Image (cartoon, rainbow, N blue to C red; front, side, top):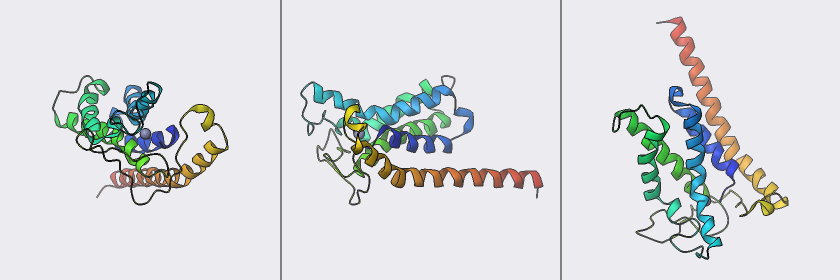
Length: 186
Ligand SMILES: [Zn+2]
């Protein structure tokens, strides 16, 4: 896995790209939940489910199908007043689906563990991207708060932090430009 900080940074950038009117506390809590929930599968290791099993780590909860399922369920929880199957519902469904899927994508850029079963449960093959610059985060808090964890954070600062910061700055500049154009008029 990438660390929780890495996953949350990407989800935050995705959330900031959406309509700010939706950005309630509830929206952000669900966004964080979606980007971190796929790693609930580490509990399977405790119950003896092998890593490489479809229910194992980086298995079904990291798949595209799981992200689609989460995407369909979340909009009503995030914005209860939203009419079901309206276009706004669709936008939020795509958003929460992509936030959930972003977890597996980041994991597939890491340099350790097994790959991600993107096509589970139909295909159990584990996939990595050809380029894997992100140091894999150790499982468990004790291992994370060690020199190993520091290396992971440094690697994520470069490969996740910088792109996310550039994206947020770009958005901020675009919004400022739009606002000043609107003030100046045609
Ligand atoms: Zn993961």
